[in-house]
Image 1: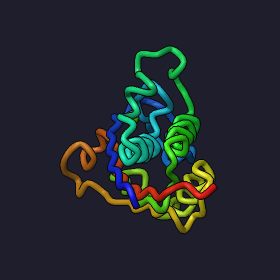
Image 2: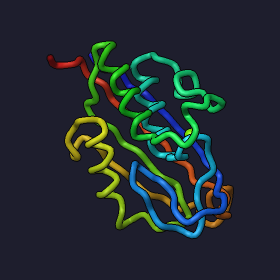
Image 3: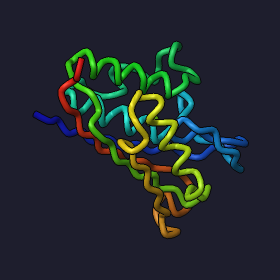
Length: 160
Ligand code: MG
């Protein structure tokens, strides 16, 4: 028995000096706009987890008008989603994700994000794959207006 889930997210650029992607702080010429820390990749992964377990979506569990979620660390959000999934009797078998960003260049950071995501979820880095794509200079990603992320996760029954 397996369960599959899919998540996607997009955050716009705003003024700032760094952004958070995959739980990693990356110095950059802009930040990402969001109610929490705007970690678009962790949000996509959280939605994939919740989706696979039939638990709705991140907006239901962590409303973007709730004061306690202002500036919130998305690693904490993802960890809580993972707990909710485990409470339903599931654990992550593997997850695969894509970050679509024209800038910053993410090639050198993929392994760091992979390690960080695995640590947040309490799994091994080889159960996590992170891919990076550009927007080919078109669309909101290519015009440097936003970063998008997509994730797919497979859940297996929890081993006690
Ligand atoms: Mg989001």
